Length: 104
Ligand SMILES: [Zn+2]
Image 1 (cartoon, rainbow, N blue to C red):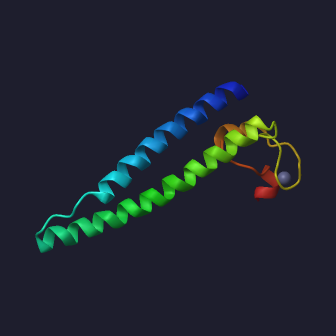
Image 2 (tube, rainbow, N blue to C red; image 1 turned 90 degrees about the vertical axis):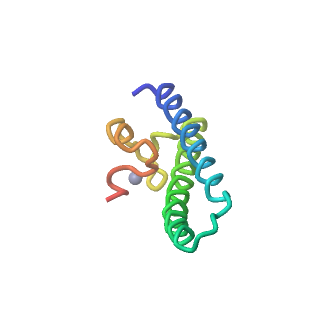
């Protein structure tokens, strides 16, 4: 895939993930309702949201790193052995920083 296209796709995904993260953060801040059973249920869904928040935050960081790597021209270079990461691998795993040998 063209690196420019990859960059656009990554930026779109970053914007999308940021919006999603904001939504979750807002709903986590929302005031809890009064009833005890409702509170228990809300706590449970808050836990799910916290986990989701963590995984989205991780993904956002990975996208940012990938974009930085594109900007510095080493997107397809393995961060461990300096070898090339195949285009096929990058298409499947756009955030990867390792070639297939180092990742194994
Ligand atoms: Zn490598």
